[in-house]
Amino acid sequence: MPVCSYVVVPRPGKAASVASDLARIDGCEVAPAENAEMLLLVTSTASLDEDAALRREVEALGGIQALLMTFGEVDPDTSEADPLAKRSPADQRTTNEVGQP
Image 1 (cartoon, rainbow, N blue to C red):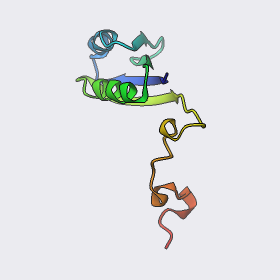
Image 2 (cartoon, one colour):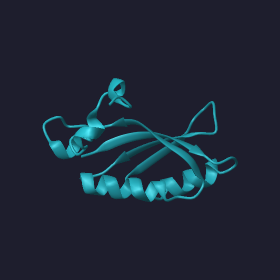
Image 3 (cartoon, rainbow, N blue to C red):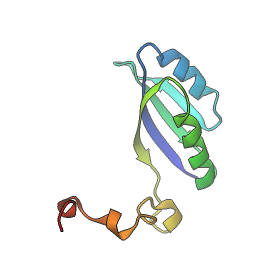
Image 4 (cartoon, helix red, strand yellow):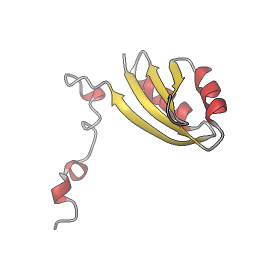
């Protein structure tokens, strides 16, 4: 059961409408941040496929300037839940290796 949390940065003046849109999506719980015009979003789904579909639905909403994942459940025992498992060897280089011949 994937559980993720995000900071949502709405476009100026859009926090209330984005919060309302997010609250209508199954699997989303949203709360306003207390000290900024940002939203805190927690998602919960039954499968990785549902999680990907939910994330696409959230990303497609108008009014969102940035969506920043702060936590994502990763199960080290399954390659499907490991976001690095599907990366190509070239993508798995460390930052020190980027740009090096």
